[in-house]
Length: 172
Image 1 (cartoon, rainbow, N blue to C red):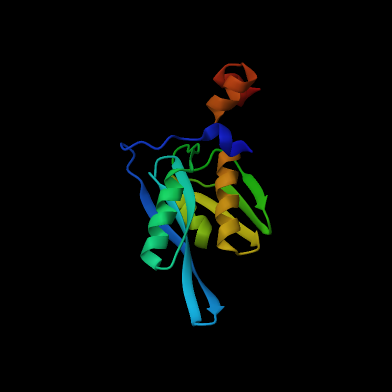
Image 2 (cartoon, rainbow, N blue to C red):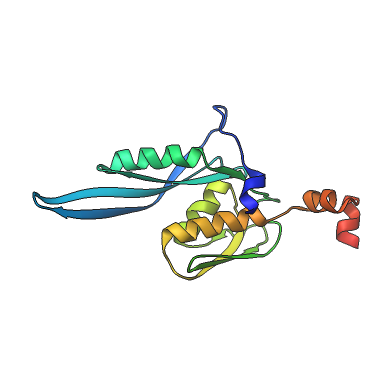
């Protein structure tokens, strides 16, 4: 998995902002009646290339969100951002959710919906064209978006991996 190489350790100096992606209410029917519990998908990021997601489950919404934030802080990854956009086109599939992202020129804005928008905003992407196809399940959309961002490589990484100069990457 590509995300393992880009793991970021949680430190106190990171200013992480959390975004709630989805809340799901689960009902368990017992002899004494119905018991409600909640699960919350949360995305955290510093809006400068670091993003993570977490799932929290509890009997109250606020507790579930807090657990999701703590889980997300343990699951941070570094993603490449070049001039407010992504370095290249990327498609990824996780379960039934397929995502496609394309770099956009300055001023285009963040053209993405739902769970993808939350992940891209938390990562700090300003200009991008994104589309989700297939399943709209927020769990799989968040995972697919983060994995697609983890698979991206900027020009410096490519040059280092190939062992050539940076201008050789662009000019062949």
